[in-house]
Length: 155
Image (cartoon, rainbow, N blue to C red):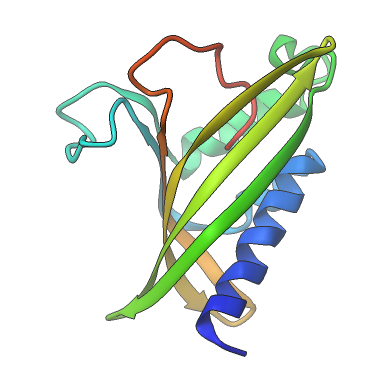
């Protein structure tokens, strides 16, 4: 299987887990030292010296998943339906990581209101026995400089 096919299969699996609301299985895709980052602008290079929309390590992701799974979680009550569409996938191997770039359109419907978020995604993936583990997921939203609704489910 080519690298692009392997990566496409992995990204599709990740998107399917999110669309199914299977956040626990989604979290298992992350390495213990991984970061999930949504910068406040596509030009942002500093994670800690500037405000980000989201910057979460695995302990914070675990807390997010626990909150999303709570039966009275307001952010997901009623449960939103999502579709994550992934495209324009490119990948290359650099040292011990697979560097992936892709485009994302995520539509969420909650209370009969549809919200879409779009952007460019960068994954740094580490090869593992079962495929890949996420070391970094960066989502550069095209809406990042503007005003938009709170992000209740992962992108």
